[in-house]
Length: 193
Image 1 (cartoon, rainbow, N blue to C red):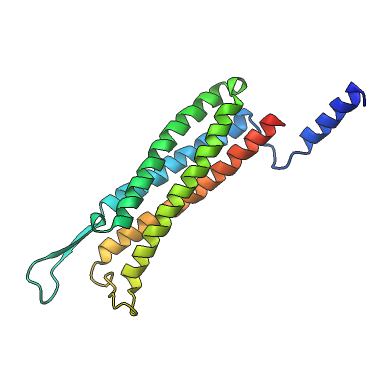
Image 2: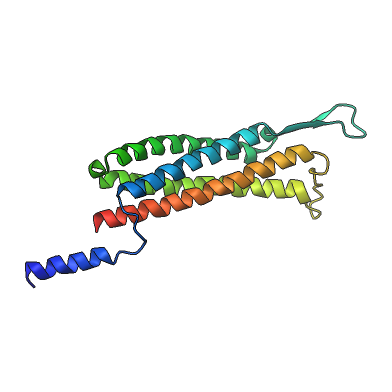
């Protein structure tokens, strides 16, 4: 096989790489910057909504007001911590992506590999926090008659609405992280091909 045949084979393989036109060019970096800014907004919003979710009620039969706060549930505490980590990561990765956007030719495969790995890790962290909080929120909404846990959302409706909103926004953050992970892996794949 001659060098011209190898070169044409490599050109053909590069042109048939799946996944659209987003390579390590400026357009791909711009998409990543926008998605990372949306991730920052989603995680920060979810944290603020969860942290501000508190409500006090006087329950009949108890003269002392009872409070509902996110700190009363380990799953909600994990949620806030996990989304805080994801928020901090989104700031760092946005800065790295902006620097790569300014000089795409100087972007190394190591940066793409680190972004792909960390995006995948963050998907796992945010999705697990969303699932854990969603499970606790569902029990608060519906209760569990088998173990005689009563629902609390009929008493603490504002608290439950805040928690539900925070979980919904964190689900959006999980989807954004999944998209970022796919884009990072495709960019890395196209870069090393």
